[in-house]
Length: 143
Image (cartoon, rainbow, N blue to C red; front, side, top):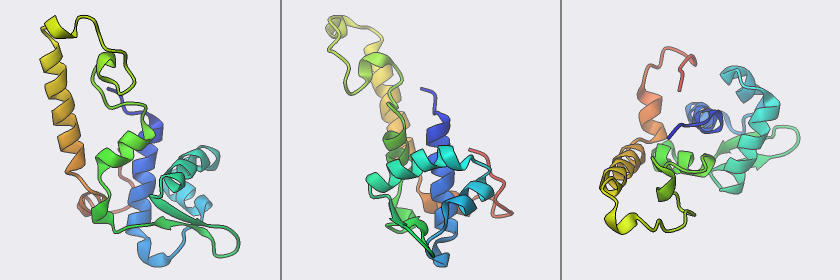
């Protein structure tokens, strides 16, 4: 499993919006500047987050983006499952994978199932609120 820039940037955007939630709707260009992410690339990520109802978007003057829920209601796991094709450690465990003809006698399948469980449990127990508590010295965190 390798988390793409889309997943990492989505987390950064969500943390940024959580940290500035009292400021109302935040324009895309401000988020992009604070996070040092291309506006063009960020547009695609934001669209995905809005479509999934993780963010509200408002067009026009005073527009921008904001969280739809409190930071403690968003898990890292939910955000990454939305942005990544899969969090499965091996291809045979992906949601759309065909049933492997060797599954019944595969000696390594239990390892991958256990690893998938550990990954999902771990990521589902970290919230945006938790990430906001880490190193509040500035917006210079790296994910």
